[in-house]
Length: 121
Image (cartoon, rainbow, N blue to C red; front, side, top):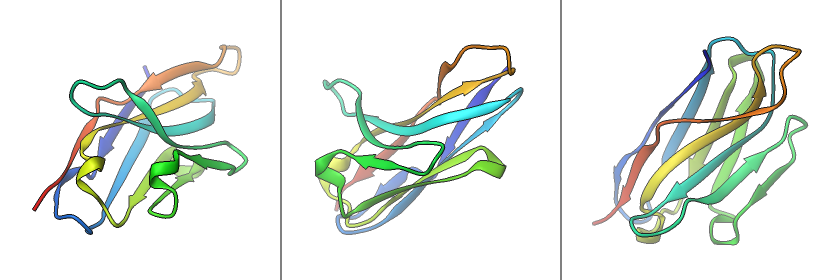
């Protein structure tokens, strides 16, 4: 059974930084794209950043230049370095991985349970 476990959320002042981590565990043959989404109260969950198995990245415009997504394939882990945080970044942050548990499986979406990021003075 594959599980994704996020960590690193918390309360930070505007202009501060946080680093989120999401580690996948269990039976994993291969991981394709890793991504971070966020969901604020009353809003839909939306993509923040994604990174492919080849290292290509993409970001939502509102975080470009402030957030950096990276991955450690040996650890099945994805990171989100968040700098210059703003109150509008406040949300629950969720990681998603597209992976194959076994080499005969199709690609499957897995989600973490979420970690709260609150930016406030």
